[in-house]
Length: 373
Image (cartoon, rainbow, N blue to C red; front, side, top):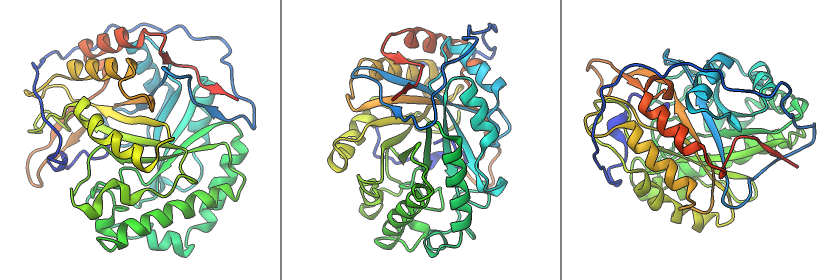
């Protein structure tokens, strides 16, 4: 789940784990400069991001480094990914943690737009990067009480002033208890999911009331519920078809080379997509986060990613409209008190993975240019 780095063993056990051969390669691919238009075609203010045509998929990426910090998206990090896979991206996905400031991340959004891509902002109202704990400040109750109305109004006004399309999500992976907006931290069964739904609607309307209609709103859930109790089912967190534009999913093979589970991408999607179609049959779905670490003896990232890309591009899930790889490295502690393990998911650091991406992305079904109305 990207930020689910310290609790890899807590992934829901309902998904099928499968194995494949491991790889010990350590060197990155040779660098090359990806040709880029001298003047990318930029959207005009007031234009909206459109979905690709049937049978086509947007290609995006979450850009990160090896620091474990999430607010580090830079042009150089995007260059490293794009040069490795041989394609530009339609969106650049990055985190905006409010413990680093509540102002709209204009500078990051500006350079992404200048590259001809759409900023995809992972809006994280939290006071630290610690997971598996209750949030002391940006609670669901505090949001609904109006404690942060001024900050939300300012954010919405800045998003409106930005003018061109933005993708935004809040409440990432709400059906996983690693994040503080999960129901487990907000009153438990019944109360918690209901508070989340209300807070999601409150936050979105706060932005819309400032005229920020250039935002595409994503409701982003994990492919499996954790805990896997009926009260915590992802369906209980859906804030409504009138407020959600797209649905996002997180699907990972494993969280480190020590994780004892290796989850099958196809099984994960086959498990969750029918559930989504029941609650939101006409909403487009994106795999907002997918990834696999190198060095796990159960499986290899290149085999896992190659199969995932092949099936998405082949149209196995017709409502799927895009995907973005979690391109980051970090240190993870699977069990409190045990040694840290270094997790590597960056495509540019695994030549076989980069080759798989290059081959699969060289397909007319993959769209790297955003479509604007």
